[in-house]
Length: 312
Image (tube, rainbow, N blue to C red; front, side, top):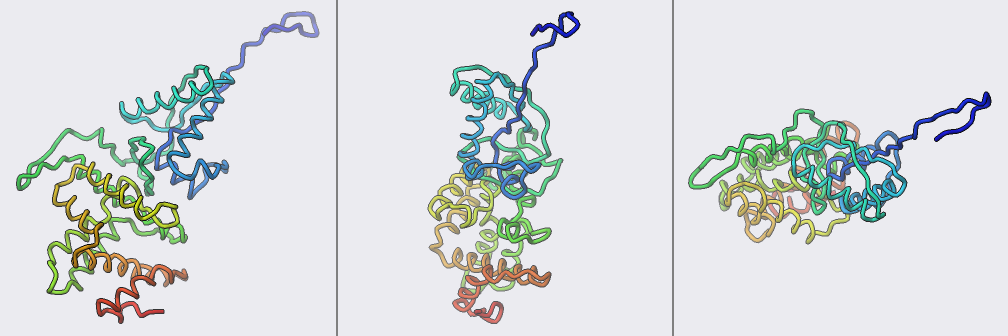
């Protein structure tokens, strides 16, 4: 704009360009904001409720930006063409809601896990690692084993359980809590020590290893997340069936979920027992975690192991 200065000379000022930050909705950042607010920024309950809520709020913000000629800066990593397409669609939705247009300039954010940006997914809880690979970056490799084709990307994805922290421990403020993979190892170890001869030990061991595998995609969902058991079952079954694992793995996972066989029910007991024993380990540091032992104590009586976790 042009104005007249006190001395009478024209004062030519360049137009001011306005920019506003926005974050591409993804499960990793959603969980980060739930546990550790970003730079003191307040997020609404709707934004933190789910990826759907996060996405809807982001669209509203982008629509406001477009209406006010604010150029959005997307502060999230965009790793592959699928993410770029999701970003374009999100920007298009925000623009359409206000009947204006906007642009974006992607920039780097804190390191985090890859996300497919699918709002129907929930979340993951990751230990931050800058070298966490994106499946899109892996060579297109697969191997054949006993007639099953296993993709390398599926193997690497499953190993992501090593970086996925157990939600309950994080919420209770446990320092350096265990990962889901560590918990699965604990369940498998207990199977080697406690599995009755009447059960198929091999199947129990395999089921113990894979019983939480879907969490690498949907996260460690707990009752505090507001997800019903039926919804959790549907979400996890959908995830496991879309992973590139063997049919046997999917069958064992489904068997555990159905809880109809003696082996599946015993693995569920071991799942609760591992949690209870882990709670005792954390209690040595001064934490009070009785609620993590209650169900295991009841099941221990049923299986004849009440000396391990006495009823409170």
